[in-house]
Image (tube, rainbow, N blue to C red; front, top):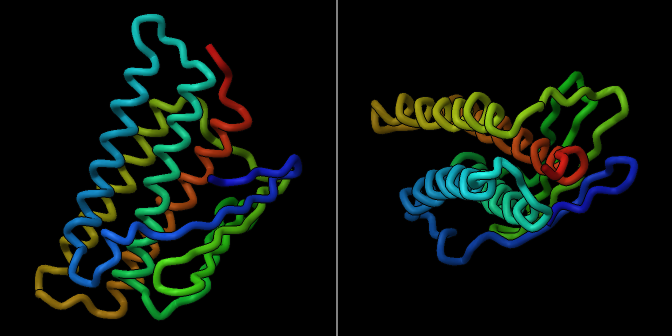
Length: 187
């Protein structure tokens, strides 16, 4: 769970799912990513129901699912594309939105960060963000990975580019969690 202070300082930590951290379980991690993505879509549509409204409990469930997807993207970055890196900085909006990931060991991670007053969230409607930002980012990640594996060898430059795609997904998910938690109105 991401803690968000009144002045938008972010903190979180966690442990990767022990069933998914094996070095030969990339396929399972990809499945967790795609299933998590589909689960968010299903949950959101069910939350809206016939009345097109979302309750506080439904917001909490949506955040929980986004946080699960966040853990999968962080895990894939750590295990599959940059296992040697113990500290990562991801920025958006000229550094006005910044998160840091610190990996304590193979399966324990910490997230910290902040969103300055100067940062302007461009999120308006969850459905649009999901369809236009998140789905596109995941598609780009899968395409980048697919292209990198065509020659059956992923170079260090390709690993770095794939890790950057995961970083983009990660910060977008964190931004949506903050948006839902602090700005999304109950309908």
